[in-house]
Image (tube, rainbow, N blue to C red; front, top):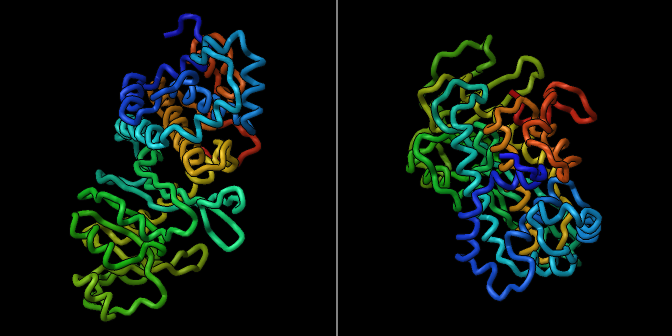
Length: 389
């Protein structure tokens, strides 16, 4: 409720602070800390994300310029860039990862009834990763190539609401397929992924756990046709087959039949071959499921453009992971605010408004009055607005 609070303070009020303080105790975040408690560190980093600050010096200068309003933002002491840098280097990043997962659970509950283009009651996940290039001399803990460093952000995106239900940050060398070992499969859920995740042993483990997968076949797939279902080629479905793997190791790793669907896009003329263990849904639905995987690409593009995860305030592994997890927390927090306040504006529009009004004292909902999610701007709105109605 608005009682003369700044917009920033009202946004922070949507966070479950009791849970945050319990996590601080669990991870000893404030142990022997004399200044800049974890809650203040989080608020400062959240402010940096919402206003897209360029550096620690930028954060320090901006908050010093608004010293009279800083206290009302929940930041009680002056912000020193050296103190903030030290906190990012030393406070356990797992604290912020755990807090992000608390918000993710809330957001997924709020968006559970949303539609994503397909009439399915099952949960549908898109799995993919994005690479953030770094300088090897400054980030030696994240090797990628001989002269380059990088971190990979592996994400399992719940397509209802475009909420990241799982996120793993690794160095650039970790192959995407190994992330399947970290997932806890959900029975009845669909996992949509590209060919980088085509590993029959891991896919069979997913199958045995009761999950469904949709992926693309590689060109050198060695398999024989067992049965062909009738198809209507006018829809683009060239064939819908049940197949068995021929390769010695692949047959051992995945001993049961698979479904192979060959689809030809009538507009582009491209032919795509899909593999799935789902045998009941129509072939066109399987193709549409794979097409929906593009939402995870939009998610990566969106957070890279509108949150601070391409340039970092610190060089250590802990500082980088802290910054990424707090960025994810802010993304999910704004999605929660959008849903709870029943706002029609896109997530992009909400962030733009917040970035220039955080120090203002007015009711939060009043700040978003008159927003139009269909208005034009310099961004490609069809590509980036994940939360458009």
